[in-house]
Length: 289
Ligand SMILES: NC(=O)c1ccc[n+]([C@@H]2O[C@H](COP(=O)([O-])OP(=O)(O)OC[C@H]3O[C@@H](n4cnc5c(N)ncnc54)[C@H](OP(=O)(O)O)[C@@H]3O)[C@@H](O)[C@H]2O)c1
Image 1 (spheres, helix red, strand yellow):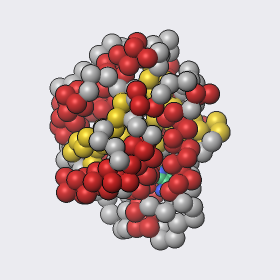
Image 2 (cartoon, protein in one colour):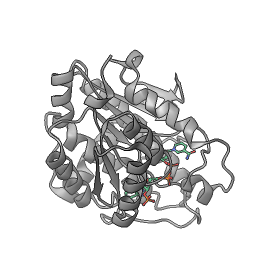
Image 3 (cartoon, protein in one colour):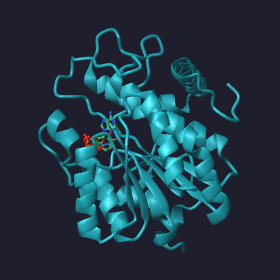
């Protein structure tokens, strides 16, 4: 079993809720953490709090607003400056349905905001960080990508992916979360045999976080509950080599049917790479599309 002190772990959206909780726990176990957030002052406060609680000095804060693809690219290069390898990437940052569920919002690149932040930004980040994950897999025998998705999943309507007609926040959120699961399945397939695994997780239902308080009002469970499930996917020895699985909390589960539709996955992949290449003149390395 590996010593947690050897791990370099990056967590997006570590300035609140689930990300902050898991960062605090992992800092206490001695992991080196690259903690991402969008607000530099909040980031400095949270880092100080985690430092005080854990006693860890192995913490780095990286600032980027994931609603801008240019910032995502900058974030990836900051990760490369901070560490030569990455043992675990936790794609956790997310926007919920919002306090006004009929108000459609756009990202800096003009895409529907939930699709852009919850899904597309993390596709770009993950692909940009693959060389660091692959290096960790070569040196330590494995590396893990954990996508924090949700049980809230809804089939993507390929005629209106950006939800320009009849916008609804819950639909936008659920489509973006299913897109994350579809991306996870593709990634796992592509990374077979490389030592890098990719899994998706529904951490827990209605945890007591800012997202839930703003969106639904009353939480149903604690953040610690979701943190336990997420930490298992990050560290558990019994999950070594497990890849391409959607976990509902602590057990493998069936995702929305669209996640198993290879044609739908191809359409999402092609759309995503064309949006990324249009916005950034970006080309994914090593895959045919
Ligand atoms: N809460 C639940 O019951 C539940 C259930 C299933 C899945 N999830 C998933 O769990 C993950 C964590 O959610 P949470 O409940 O912990 O929510 P949260 O407390 O609202 O935390 C969300 C995190 O994402 C960051 N974030 C949001 N928009 C961003 C942007 N544009 N750029 C960069 N960072 C951004 C937030 O930054 P700020 O601190 O600056 O706001 C915060 O750090 C999400 O992916 C969510 O979909 C949650």
